Amino acid sequence: AKHILLATGGYPEMPQGTDGSIPRHAISSDGFFELETLPRRAVVVGAGYIAVELAGVLQALGTETSLVVRKERALRNFDDMISETLDTEMERHGIIIFRNTNGVSKISLDDQTALKTVVLNNGEVIKDVDVVIMAAGRRPAVESLNLKNVGVKQKDGEYISVNEY
Image (cartoon, rainbow, N blue to C red; front, side, top):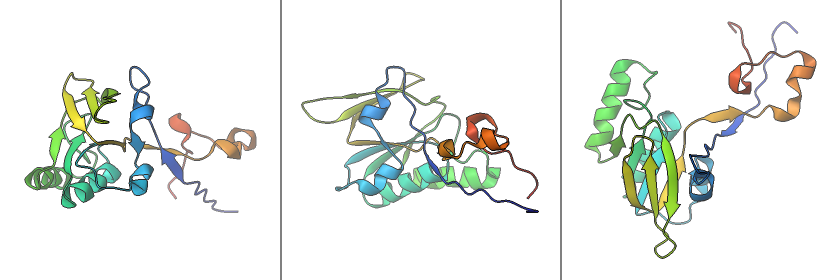
């Protein structure tokens, strides 16, 4: 074939944190759709469009929402005018943005209240959280394809190397 398209899809990446607590106390961006009740207070971790969308939906529905980004702002690889305007509008609508955090270090659960405490890598702490949603990236669903055995080149993170098409 002159052109080949491999559309494998992907799945949410779930970081471990410094003590392995993140997968135990957080849900993935896919898990958002399984929530049965609206959380009172939520933390969304990520700087891409999925994190931004989830934070916006939760805030619009009445959840006190914090967005945790590793660097200065969300959508930082988009046009500056878009990411700066988005940043201003998210704050105007009440989303609390934690910047330059370098991500989440760990999450602890209070067994008495079922509320979570989120410790960020920069030392900041977010307390009394109902749900933590990790939307910090996706990985390609290619493990079962044995791409190396058929000569398909991959980059770091198992992403398929592509050309101009």
